[in-house]
Image 1 (cartoon, one colour):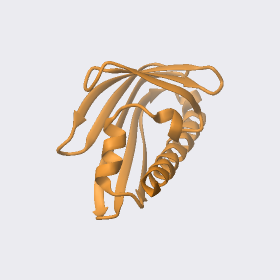
Image 2: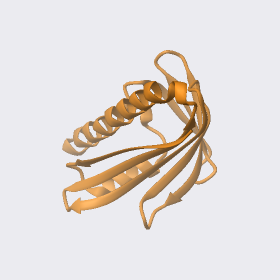
Image 3: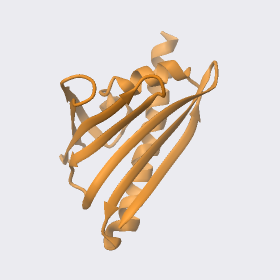
Length: 144
């Protein structure tokens, strides 16, 4: 079943700083409580991001798009422990004001109906926590 999950939050960080963090591809282990390790092979579009979850699960993302003008990053989750046939993540950063950004994280997935509700809850919570973690990390770094 094709499905979409969207989490949009306004965070009190300049949009250019948020975009710099997102477009840098790595660092997810600093933002997402569910991620224990994040490494990146290559740079830019075509790079591979390797994630290890706190429970030991492995994830591999291929970076499909980094659009600096529109501030959009898209990745294809090519390997994961989740019961999905397709998982495409799109992150868009927009300027709310000079001191705040609107961050929209959309996941397009193809998941069997039997796993839908459980997976939706897990993904929504993980992305929401990750956005909050990103905001906290950038606030901490920019106070120094």
